[in-house]
Amino acid sequence: MLDAAEAVVVEHGAVRLTLDAVAREAGVSKGGVMYHFPSKNALLEALVARAIERSHAAREAQLGKLPGAPGSALHAYVRASINDPLHNDRVSSALLSVVASDPKLMSPVREFFAQRLPAISEGVPFDRAALVHLATEGLWLMELFRVSPFNKTQRSRIKQLLATLAAEGGTVP
Amino acid sequence: MLDAAEAVVVEHGAVRLTLDAVAREAGVSKGGVMYHFPSKNALLEALVARAIERSHAAREAQLGKLPGAPGSALHAYVRASINDPLHNDRVSSALLSVVASDPKLMSPVREFFAQRLPAISEGVPFDRAALVHLATEGLWLMELFRVSPFNKTQRSRIKQLLATLAAEGGTVP
DNA sequence: GTCTATATCAAGATAGAC
DNA sequence: GTCTATCTTGATATAGAC
Image (cartoon, rainbow over all chains, first blue to last red; front, side, top):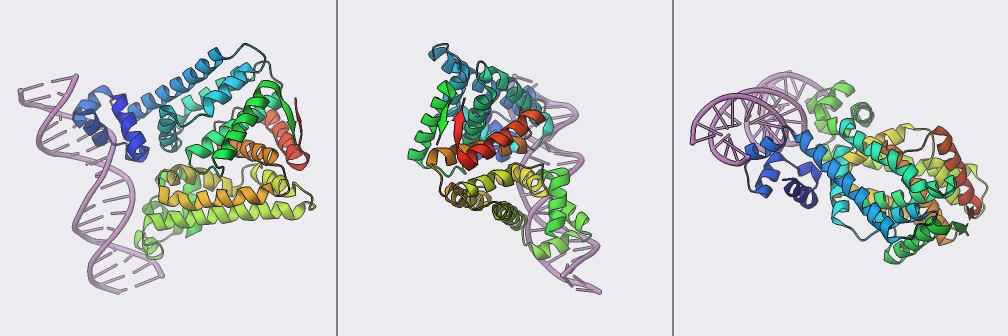
């Protein structure tokens, strides 16, 4: 059922995430959908929770692949965030614009960000953690809204730059 | 009329930017609103254009206040973006979530970003321009969505860091 | 130019049969 | 658990009077 909802969101955007559309996609009727989710907000909440969980998992996975040095948590975060568009990104992307307009739906997202900062900052000076975090998030969000002005070459250069900064710091010319 | 629409957007969010609400705020009737804007999308387009224009003007204003050294365009951009919440930010904030779900409305925004990058990159190495740009945009967007995990102290430290990097570059520890 | 009245529609939600 | 049918609401948009 959530899979069907995600499919709708990815395909048509979250604005057109209607109970009808989910029902059609899932091969059931509206009534069937509303048995599982008493309201549309409940459905959105579940989608948000899932996206957060996946994002967390992606970061953990990257962390497992890196040797445990200072800055590795930050580095893992960068690697997990800057990737070729993954399924979860497409879902988050479409979701964000709808979720953002409802403070109640945003609150788990806010908490997610609040908890992530200390986790990725571990063993790294504040300036470095903040800068890398903000730039990574900036790229992610700009790509989410499809307003990133960087081309493929520039993007991979940025990717490299952020990875280096995350792992060792460095000088910005 | 646009002022009324902005007032509604700021106060109740763009989701509730209805023709009724605009009419009430402007002190006219729905018919009156629709005389000026044939459709709701036309109204949104006008709001987007206005927000873009103001954003551009804010940057120009900062640029005028800085001595013309290499990196001053980037520095001016940082100063214009990182400020205590201005009226235009509140409008953009509320607008973005609605506009983002309509590619047609997003296209002027996309163009704005594309044209801004070369403007603020002038006379600055790519790495520095990209990093500062992304981090600034990251902070702006996170604050837009109220998910920034930084407190007041941290924020002003970041502000200082970005200003320094924009103006002279530097070392990230 | 601005108003009122109305058409039209899409969507969330409810109730009760099966 | 899932379906159909129906209610209700809120919003865009149109038509035509003033």
